Image (spheres, rainbow over the protein chains, first blue to last red):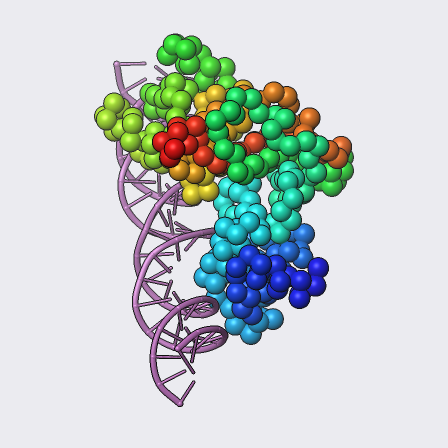
Length: 139
Length: 139
DNA sequence: TTTTAAATTTGCAATGATTTCAAAAATAAA
DNA sequence: TTTATTTTTGAAATCATTGCAAATTTAAAA
């Protein structure tokens, strides 16, 4: 996705594309490694000349509220962010800490009973264990 | 479940049932409202005469590591605990904050593709939205 | 029962991610 | 250009959680 397209997405969502916002949006959308706010900050500080960690937090919250980015809470010590908003599951390796995206066969509705009367607007399937790579290293 | 049975469960898990541990275990197993560590502490402090918040944290970690209790991370500002360890989904109401247990039809495996080579030892399905009660109040 | 060793509890301080806040800077509107 | 609005910034505050070392309790040994 080009920078121009990303800009249009922000505008469409009613978010004015400032230099910082566009840079943060581009970073979160393009990377695949589920960065933390701190990570976004470290990665962009030099490129932008200057950047505040507060701006990163504020901006990410803005994106999450607008539905442009998903906030993951799979690691209970910090949040991380995912620009890929299509429904999918997340796997966190207990050994290396890496987070993997897993496609989901069906909608979460297939799993849940007795949800009548409840409005489900968000669903997260978090899996934990040992990843392929760490498993092969061990053996 | 009786206090004697709970005591036996702790011993079976290799955990010595001190006064504090048994009280905390009983509380978490018996309550249905997914308490935080702070909540456990507030609820038991008077009954036990004295209690340290650190003890509550240490003890809950002990239970979680032993698989006796599940730690939920559905609300991203704090953890809460569930003594019901059978696989089930959790729904958090964005309005009232209450957490509901939802039975799951199938194993999470039914949902996930491409998990070959990965060892999944833990699975959490977190749902968010508006609960039945809050919805009926609104209308 | 006494002595000794090990396990457990305790409270306070430290940690670290996140938020608050008010001022400064940038941008848009008049 | 002037004025109003939005955005960014950095330092301080917050708050759940953890580290740590001393005090207490419990179990084991003598």
